[in-house]
Amino acid sequence: MWSSIIAVVGTLLGGFAAHLTAAFTARSARVERRRQALVDAFPALLGALVDHRRHQYLKITARREGRADRAEGREARYEARSAVTKAMAAVQMATRDAVLLGLAREAVGATFALGDAPESELEAAGDRARRTHDALQEAAASFVYDYR
Image 1 (cartoon, rainbow, N blue to C red):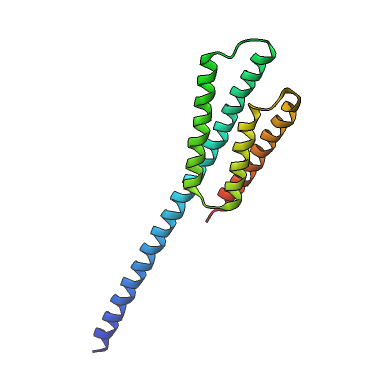
Image 2 (image 1 turned 180 degrees about the vertical axis):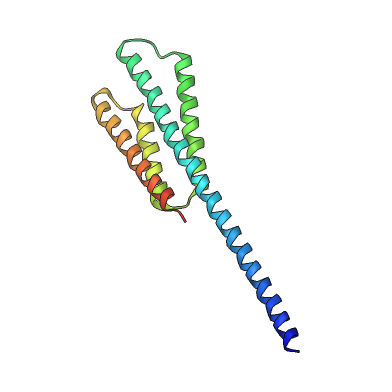
């Protein structure tokens, strides 16, 4: 009789241990998928911001040189802006962290404002865009590194 009880208890404990292992593995996989989504989303946004700033500087340089704003340049800027918008959507899907989302919105806003800055405020606008970019990059890297 004792051997039957021990066998039943052993079977139950084995089943419970298997359940705990499966639950832990599933949770670990979910956490890793979320972390990977962050690893994918933030560099995509940061890269899109760099690309958008590049297109804005090309527009500014052309204006300074007295060249007309051509359709190809406008189209490239619209594409760059769309890439920022798409990348921001990916960030919003990857996290609900208010601090990170606030920094991302600030970096996007500063980058978009660069193209509309008057010549007298251009240097300050560029500095702000780069500063917000760096702040977002640092916060995102820390968040991803510490993500559990």
